[in-house]
Length: 281
View 1 (tube, one colour):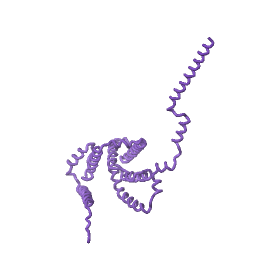
View 2: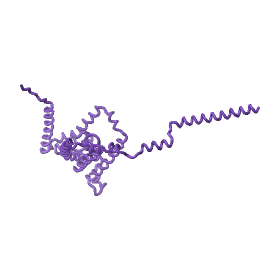
View 3: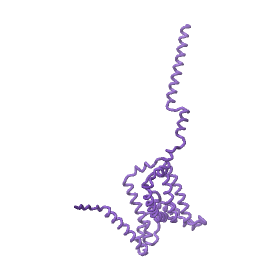
View 4: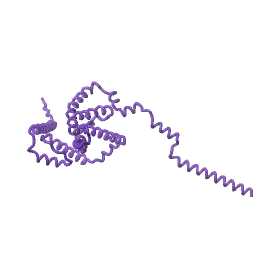
């Protein structure tokens, strides 16, 4: 009986030891996918580290540009490019501001400031930075939706002018768009543009060109055209009031259009002409 009791006790002890080992094995298997706290801390320290020179060059590319700048090879070309951009940027920026129903000087602010910022943080040598026509039209449409002149006449904004309110609204819109653009950039959302088909881009470009052209009819014809969300209404209104056209702006506009079309045609013909090599004996 004593031997049987000892065997039973030994079996229970072995069973308990085996179950304990099994539980420890199962617990180890469950915790295998989870690193220890010490490992977590070490990995966190590796991820959160002090920035080094490589990080500085990646986030501020102008450091590499200045360090590897070839003065003899690049300086003269950069000076010519800067003068060319400056000559075109002043009238273009003022025109974009007027297109956005803002004072002309704000077009210069919006054109010059991004160039200095992108020169420091940008990495592309071909990206055009600054306001564009379609963005100016969207800003103008957003400002026009609030109808500031009518609200000022109703006494809603005492002591304010429509131009001041338009500038304040455009500044607020700029901040909102900037924050959203930064968030989308951090989220690497630029890959979504790869899902846009060619026909969508062509349709957007052609539609934007038509809207921009119709928005300039009032300057070309010399009389006021009411704003409308439907371009066809703008076109019908302009055709119906053609007798009110003022000769001076119409003549200047037509001459400018003829000059631009002729210059484009001559450039294409000149570029397509191949030089003829005459061999001499």
